[in-house]
Image 1 (cartoon, rainbow, N blue to C red):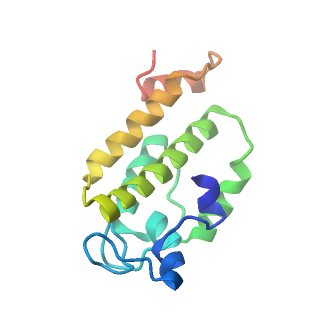
Image 2: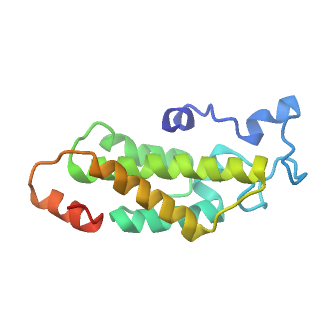
Length: 156
């Protein structure tokens, strides 16, 4: 999902528009299924949509990373220097970012094709529990950063 997002290959409605394949189950043509205010695009869906932004703010606070920008290019440029680092905080941040992207896309598709939706809090809880379960499967050395991570995510 993250690779598709970075390469701008996700089938958002702005990319499907040339083929006239953008009518949602609610009859809306080309608007974001999450906020129904602006066209559905990569930049809007993940970084400017009010619904997704609120979910991201909660996730960013949880892992204590700054909210950089609502602009896609600025966001990616900020994250690239950390991409290959394997420190605990970076691994945690990568997991949260990837999980956020996956579940925002899933929520978008649910609203677009199934007419089902979750509240901000429900979606955030799904993201939080998914990251926690993934972290449970990782073996860490006993460092102060790891102890902080285990305490934050309730991992024993």
